[in-house]
Image (spheres, one colour):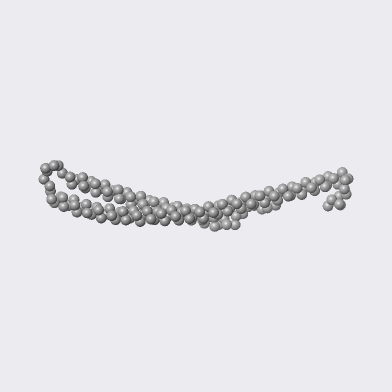
Length: 160
């Protein structure tokens, strides 16, 4: 009779599972970093909008040139920060895409071993069932021969 099922690549399966979890965590961190950059970009855009709005004055109202120049300098700084944040966002998006590819690769490698384990278990189960059926058939034949010998149909020595 076949023994208990033992998957010889169980250690590799556990390793692949842990690598998949590491890839998931890496993707999570990359997504969090991307969200942080997007939030920073939104804050900068809001600050730019608010600054432009505060520069508006009532019609026929006098213009304070000092304040106008200060607002313009601040808008230039904001534009530089926006450009930097957009570059950071593109870099974060690239890191997210790379992390997704790594996760996909790790998931496929893990899934391949899971499927292999399932197929091997099915093979083992099928072989166990065949072996059990063979044993049961042998026992049935022996019982029949013994009962036939006991009734006197054939001598027991000829049966065995």
